[in-house]
Image (cartoon, rainbow, N blue to C red; front, top):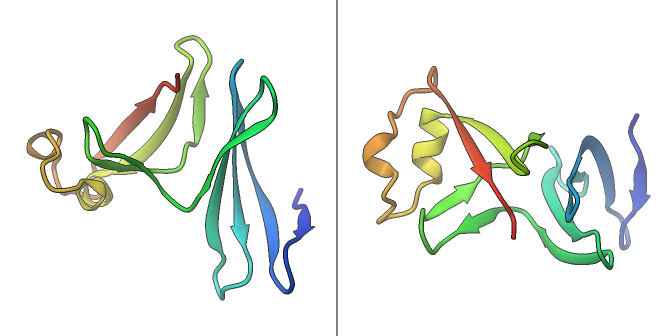
Length: 120
């Protein structure tokens, strides 16, 4: 099912079906159809008061791992973690200079890595 939500002026957002939620947060991915292929947009909403924590194109962790976090695809309800899957080549590109993870990641698109995020 695809929803179209009218966005300012000429663009539309398409809900692509990634809707993840735990007790505290809702994560939604969508696409802005204003460009030829659709630009991915992500929203993180705090459930307690429906406060939008962020609307973003990328999520960056810049204090410990220096990583552009890939879009969440799954939710581990037992451990309360949002999970992304990314191959080694893309993960290597998502790491910023000084990332302690760089020495442990193989730049190989046939190797998959799980990125687990627990939001406070």
